[in-house]
Image 1 (cartoon, helix red, strand yellow):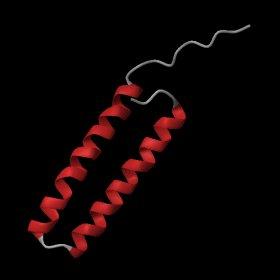
Image 2: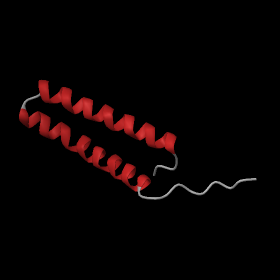
Image 3: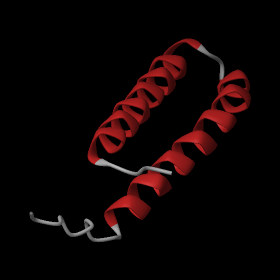
Length: 66
């Protein structure tokens, strides 16, 4: 679960890294090999993207001012 903007940015970077891995794998693996190696990565991407959506779906907590 993402709790702050810093974690959000880290999750975005992790998603980009996974996407780059898949793009590179598409170039070098046969279709069957790619499908079997990509499936768990694609599931991880979906989970991380859902975390981003959930974080953005809630307003930022109000800041208490002293």
